[in-house]
Image (cartoon, rainbow, N blue to C red; front, side, top):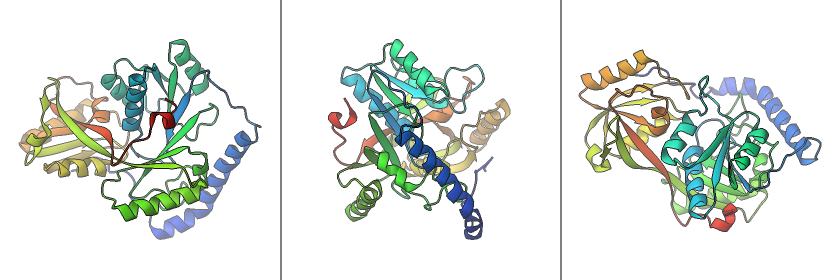
Length: 335
């Protein structure tokens, strides 16, 4: 069962028809980047280190778990981190969107500001005491100077079909990777050594940086929390359990794959568009579907941040960033 699975991959004929628009889209992005590089558009600096976490494509590459990981590292290093985001999908009157609520629940001490004007918001963060700023989804945001750009690429298809929007899912030409200072290959758990080496070689060619750090990582489930009780269910107890999935994320297929790897039996799946705000009737349908299937209702942390109904029984799968090999050194991360 599916409420909305989002856009399907474009047929070859349609991609070819849209190719001129994709070239125009990428050209405009490249021209804009050139204006910043030449100093014709002003770049503003904060008086503290700024690290951007972003990607080249639309859709999920795991930036939120990466942001949580980096903020925790900064806190452990004695910093006072703050996250700066545009706040896309934020409800009217709310101070945080779903990613922001997720981060606040995980890291109650975290300072956050969400504002399309990230220069002004960054200054507010510093005034509030942040001495290390993480610019969330900031690779294409050029008005604010950053000391390091971390780019997340999905290891399964690092550059999608190679085309910019609307023929592909790239926000800019692949050559934009030359601005990156460090690359995280997310969802890299299924790569063997040879496949990883080929991707590293390709990334270093495109970035024109033969020494750029490229790290393989995965987004691994670490716990399952019952809501609204807060009781934690060991992951082992999910094996063989029937579940109904409720999600409104960029890549619902990734959530399903994670659940299936835990040994769950997916009885039904309710999928909505990314950042969808659940209505009461949709939550009631999800609860009824799980009840009729004699199954647990499973959702993601990001989706749970948009579920206001405290009476809805559900289980939340928590995902954390884990590195396949050694992680980046603190010095590489401006810590």
